Length: 196
Figure (cartoon, helix red, strand yellow):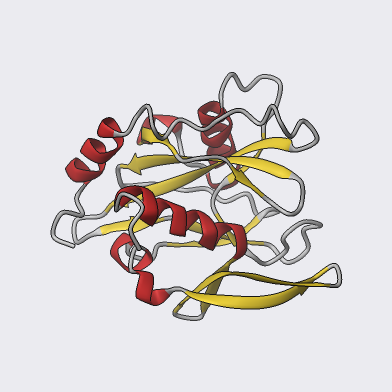
């Protein structure tokens, strides 16, 4: 994709700023509000997406690939505040390094969360400091790879006795699936105007 530059992303979010604003989860008050940051790193060679590998001892989503994020706290004025706070706490990414582009539509998980994905451009160097209780590692697949529909496939897995289908994408020795893969699919749909 020749157009896949930081400038193009800024323009795409600016054009769709009103359409991309997520609706409040007023019809689902039982869901826990949360937010994640989709950090797009402006590397010299290409844009990448910073993902985390969670530690294996966590109670929720142990060992899974995720975006930095978590539940909204009372001191968080907005989902953006939650995403930036969580990114600072989990991986040491300073808010001043993040240029927030916008938000994608709310994503509701089967585990009871209403998650707002916040998309931001990140200027290297990052100088990350991982919270070793929550985050085992970070890695950066190219954004172009993650926006290629041909790299995704439907995967079946059993959850609480029910067989579910979800998106999945392999990257080297990693396996990105579930909510994280679904949010990447939605990012692609947003950037391509719903196509693919």
